[in-house]
Length: 330
Image (tube, rainbow, N blue to C red; front, side, top):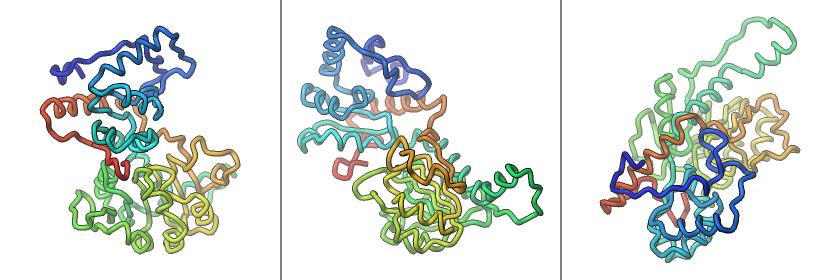
């Protein structure tokens, strides 16, 4: 970051931070503790900075404390693509939200999440559960037709950084791609048609696969619910790489049981960790990933590059990339 934006004075004292256990570990070793002197040093650094690379200890309450203790603070960058939810949880005043700019790492995880989306759609098209069940029985079944992505139409719910990358890759496979946008006339690479979120149910009823790539906000909570799932084609594949709260899980379970959803690949769930008593754990037509599809060894480097780019924009007084909407918090 210092090399890419030399106009920024980068202050770091690694002994004040929990050691990372693996690349992309933004929380660090849970057993780490600062003594009273180190805690005072840590707060002194937070309270003297104009910008923060990450939310302090990933705690909305700590973010609120820092914003109120540091009148010089101008900008906070969140490591998560959906960092708006943490900003909302900090319950800052309107004056505080207007004083400090908040940005997210949206787009940094686009390619790995798009690849997970392809995994889910391919597994649904090729009927992976049937293959696995026959293999478990050591049964060489007769030949049967498999689906092909080139023959499918896919609805991408949300055309942010992740949704756009999903659309681009799907187009390369020959899919017909429908995307949702609050600006239906917008042109996006790989998207054949854009529809308004208000037409989500009608759009979902005429596709073979659905990829959810929306952030978790009050406006998106339960958006893919019973009404939308009631009208889908039997055997539709659903992938969620956005936030678990966007999909109504009881409605999804019902749709998986009666075959409206033939296969679901979920990197996120409404509650994380996923409760042990949910039927999703034992359903053969469900693939569960513990919110890990976005992680790869280059994640930290991409986030650092984005931060350095935004630091330059801040120095020059230009608009920052990925600024959080502090009304809807996405």
